[in-house]
Image (cartoon, rainbow, N blue to C red; front, side):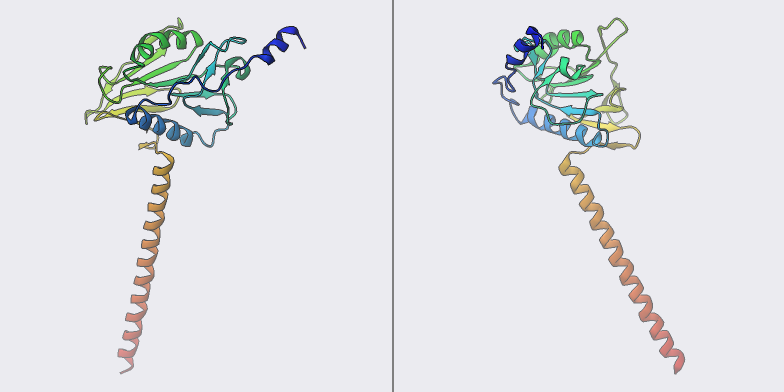
Length: 236
């Protein structure tokens, strides 16, 4: 073991920066939705890691070189629980980052973080402003070009007025409708759900199945009753 590795082992990389997780419900709710919906969407892919507000350290030996994106996705690393994320340990930085912009983060999200994420090689960077006070429009996307510099993504307006950005890496569209951000799967035409929404959908489907089964049983009983009445009529 080298002296450098011994020094490296003695360095403490905290799992918190002392900052609040989210300023208000406006930031917390979309953050929760995005992390849960993406985690559920990629649940069968063991090499896709989804997290949010987790400290990412990007310089070995420098605990001050860290950032905590609201939501980030890494392809090609094991899906497991982490206390922190170290790019030199994992072998890569996140490929997709989503920041939920607020009053206190608007300058960092729009000016400072793009420079850092560009340097780290984050291929797709999205910003969402849930209040619509700081971004026009409230959804923005940037993608690394061949020069490894961010280029603005073109935003599409759908027939119902929904704003749409496409993420080739996620295989999803980011939809902004009436100020609300939802993730859309173009393969099946459905919006991604949270854990609670998915569970509610399962229960609803089970309830519908039980209702249909009860209706079938009721119909079968009615048929038997009619057959019995017909048999008695013929015997007269």
